Length: 123
Image 1: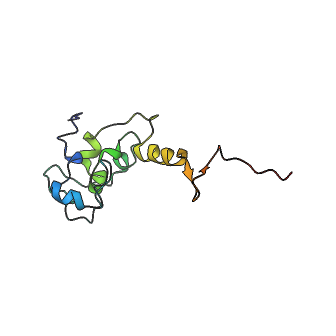
Image 2: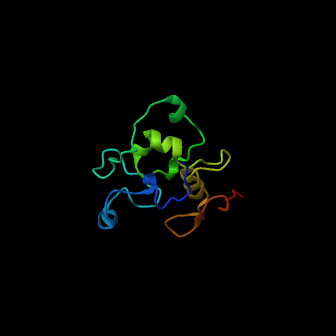
Image 3: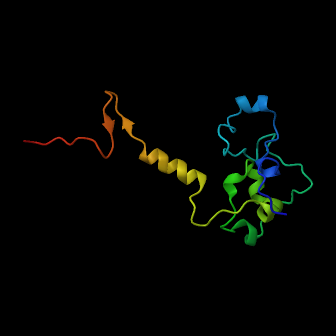
């Protein structure tokens, strides 16, 4: 059963309360993944079936960025039913890295650093 309703699917649900999420270091953005060592990152749903089948684990079209818990990326249910991504579309972490690389930096004096930085000539 593939679904597009990401508000109710298990891989888009954190198992901790919203109060805990306010202080959690893992729930900073909507795409931060709860580690498998987190008390609330352990899945207890009946659909959970860990798998290491290479056909699922290495499937390139699964959008693993949609999983909020690390345990989902080795779950057969998620790997079979989870969202697929366009193979040409950038992944969420690639977009963040590009944005950081293209951001204009400012030095201690307030001058912009980057491609538009003025060069000093030795005349």
